Amino acid sequence: MNLFRWKTLSFALLCAGVALFVLCAVFSLPNWALTALGALALCAIMAFPVINLLFWHCPYCKKRLPWKELAREDLETCPFCGETLPSRSKEETPKA
Ligand SMILES: [Zn+2]
Image (cartoon, rainbow, N blue to C red; front, side):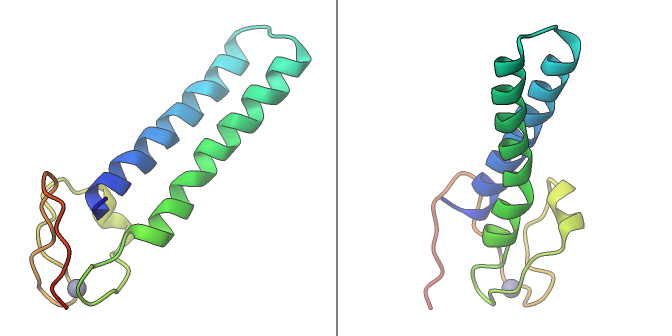
């Protein structure tokens, strides 16, 4: 899985977590359901920084890419080494 797919997964989990919290806040659910959904939401939200800390880095120079670059859809080259990052659609791994 390349870094852009990890990024997409982390954003999807973040959105799912927020949606679960909203669900808990809007609907009156039994306590066991609130606890279970709340814990699930917290896990999904916490997965966002964890996934990005682990996988949001350049596959060539291994430096962590800036967090602000997560929001960019047109990120194509590493801001540190200038290498072209693997495309979103292809599974590419660096040669060295
Ligand atoms: Zn790099």
